[in-house]
Image (cartoon, rainbow, N blue to C red; front, top):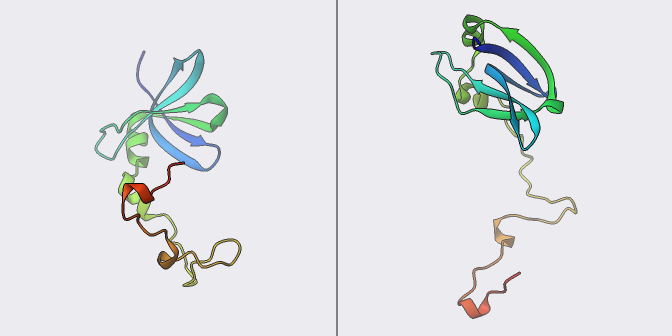
Length: 113
């Protein structure tokens, strides 16, 4: 069977473009995606449960490569976190670095959970 390429939308939030196939693991079917980069090379295979696939659009290899975005460009597109300068937790208590636990002086001072 010839390689199949697709744009796979996961839960409607994540988009992966690459070579796709169906694999069975532990008696369950998964959508296996090998993301393709702009040079036609493949990244590590990712498995998604069938129920998490929101949309699958079949593509030819050339279109998949054209739509491919390298990992570092995907990360660069993430919105930056806007900080108000405060390190408050949900109760309004300061959780800055000055409130982190102090290291124990010896193993005797350490408590195990």
